[in-house]
Image (tube, rainbow, N blue to C red):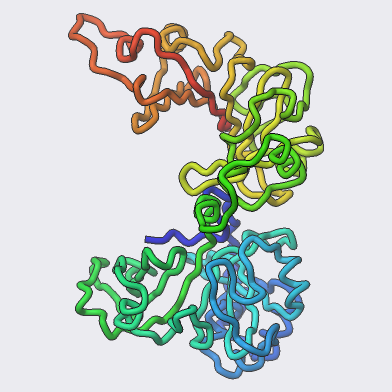
Length: 431
């Protein structure tokens, strides 16, 4: 089941919610007022300027300015000029007459959206914020003119979708159980909301929705990992010199060739920001801090490598050296205003004030810090709630806790193999 957000991510900045002053706007305004105010910028958040007004009022739909004369085909990455991750400023250069509207996401809470006229259709898209640097995120389609390559769209029945795309996943709890959501493994990122409700939010049997029609299409941005795994995404590796040349400028297209694991092993090839190796804290490592923007990081460390972490959904990251320590700063996005989400260390050069770092024996760490908390899974994650706030210590699976032999008193270190060591440190922030 989807979780619709304004941006990719694997992992990207959460958009703000706007709470209007009660009674600030009427429920509707004349078409001329709607167009004039939403063309100029975002009006006060209210139902009067909600994006659904464009679909429930035919005269307003027809009067909205058009960016293209013909409705384009829907692709995995875009609908005509509306492309994922383009900024609001870039969209305005392609389509000067966009409308600034709102999506109700809760009681008196609103999320900014833009609406673009494309032929007989209007496409709406979420944006992270109302700034010109905000990226375009999830795309919504409620008009029949926008179709997929196989001709599916609003008004198509589930029967037709099933014939076109094969096996499906059906969820009855979408849109607060007002619609039934259908996805297809053969069509990643596209969600079909059928005009079929589920009173108890359960998944309806397939036989009961055969003739249900699509009321809305929702296209979610592809993750970096999805893009990297597409056919024709390029080689899985390149030479060290080519890697440095490409990633020094900015982020290349997500690719196996430019993932973090491919950073050259030779230390001199990774740009150095400081000559001294800083001390590990719960919020920073020298000039790199949690919550710092990409623009701020580049101002302090002008030479960096732009790489991809492709575990899970994937995310962009910055690689650089601080003294003898090589670090990976995982970012929320690739835009100048994106922020450092996590700092990852995989070598032993950087240490805490107590001298702990990558390679430290777990037994030594536990002997000093008694407030251990742990999450076990494919990777064990150790953290200390009070004494080392903001730090997480991943361990390999073979070092996950074992059941000790019965003793009168069992110490935390007894749960780990005797010589188990910390293999990485994640700085996530203590505030």
